[in-house]
Amino acid sequence: DGASIVRACDVLAAKVDGELRAQLLEEAAALLMDATDDDAAVEERLRAALAIDPARPIAYSRLHDLLADRNDDAALLELVLSRIEVIDDPEALTPLFYEEARLRRALGQRDEALAALESLFLLETDHVGGLALLVELHVQREAWADAVAALRQLAGADVPPQQKRIARLGAADFLERKLGDAEGALAELRVLVDLDLANRPIRERIATLTKR
Image (cartoon, rainbow, N blue to C red; front, side, top):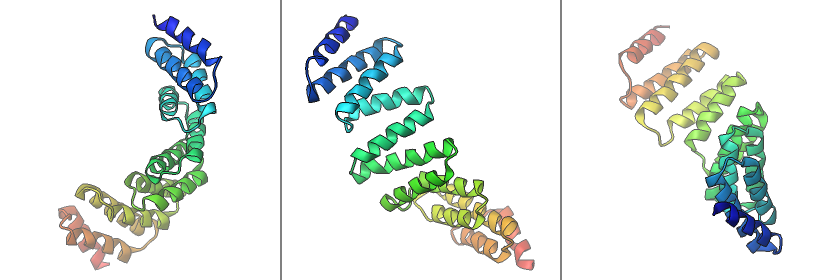
């Protein structure tokens, strides 16, 4: 049965080293994860496998799922950071930097979240999720000009028309109400007209701003 296989894997793992030991630990963890609720035993084996080879994808993904299920953001961040250290493929690093930024935001680490986004944008300039998170962080900091810049970049990214409109409207709101820049707000709204994304309320707002 499954318990016997786990015991056999553990016994063999204790007698070997390297790749084979890591494979046996992963196999035991997989069986435990699928058949029991013993998360501590699963985590112990997965961490042991990663200690042998930090780049192992299966051990990483299973431990990631385990930590995510229990909403342990601090442990998840530690895991993601350890993964970033051993990965050099840009396609694999992109989601890792994004996740680092989200986890740091959740943990209240705004400056570190912004630094993670800088790393992300070096790999993917118009990462939509990253830009949305950047807007959120700037709003939290009340850095309105930076929020406007991020919204403009988001509006220029490959996003659906509705999202472009929301981003431009957000930029116009911050320009008018937070920065006192009616001309800047008007310019954002006129872009929506040019893109055929302006509804009646937007056109009425343009008319109001134009009269100022």
